[in-house]
Length: 160
Image 1 (cartoon, one colour):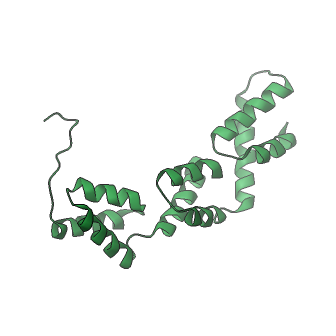
Image 2: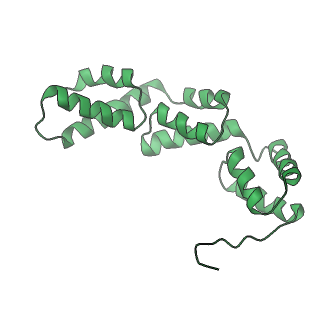
Image 3: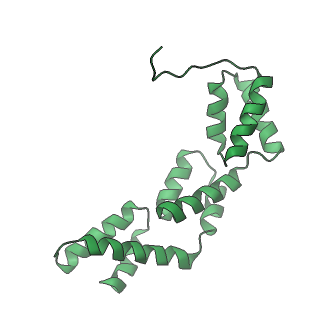
C-alpha cells in the first residue's frame, strides 16, 4: 500500500454511528460530505440512509445551518462574493432554498463595503494604466472573487 492510498476499514452501522456523530459535531457539514464519509466507511446505501436520517432527526446534520455558516465564513474570511458562494454550495448539492436563505444573512452594507475595499486594494497594485483598462482589470478581479458584474460596475465608478 502506498502512502497516497487510504486504508479503508469496513465498519458496521453500529461502529460508524459514533464516528459520524463526532464528524458532524466537529463542524457544520452538508449532506453530500456526510454521505460520502459514510460510504468511505464501507456502508451500503440502506445503512447510509438510516444514519443520515438519524443525524437529521437529532439535528446534528442541518443543511440550512451549514449553508448559513458556509456563506458567512467564506464572505468574512475569504471575501467571496455571492456568485462564488452560490457556485460552491451548488457543487455540494445544497438546495436552492438554503442557498437563498444563507445569502440573505449577508448584510448589504457589509457586502458593498467589502466590494469597495477589495476594489481599492486591487487598484493600488495596478501600475500606470489608462482609466478604462484599470477599470476593466478591477472589475475582472472582483468578478473572479464572485461579485456580481452590475454591482462591480456601479461601485467602480465611485473609486476611480
